[in-house]
Image (cartoon, rainbow, N blue to C red; front, side):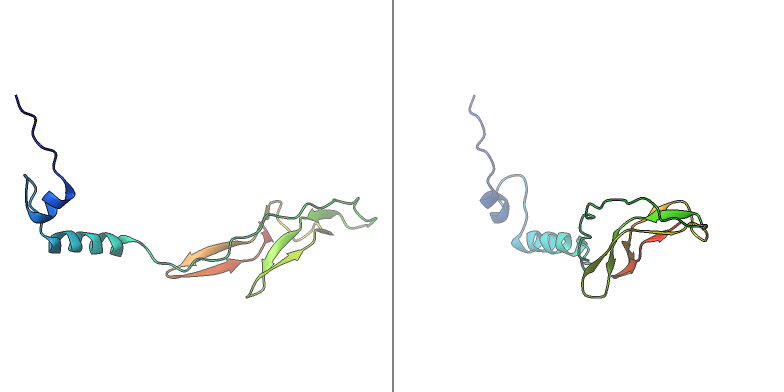
Length: 115
């Protein structure tokens, strides 16, 4: 028994074999797949935080909490803000680093904050 010849890409384009496609159909499929890719602007990746030494809290009548160092976006690049002790009142208990949020076809920077 003779084995059938494998179908090549050229056979498919030229209409040979069991699959009959025209060049126009293949071009349309490739264009349709390309249109499926979302093209949103890419925002600059936030660098890894710098290592910092946490010092002992200053002597104070007001309770203090350590606010970690973090990067902030200034409109054209990231700026490192070193950690510091801040009054505990008026803050949540969880620190959230800054991050980017997508709004439609653009991104917006949400600064670091307590939650």
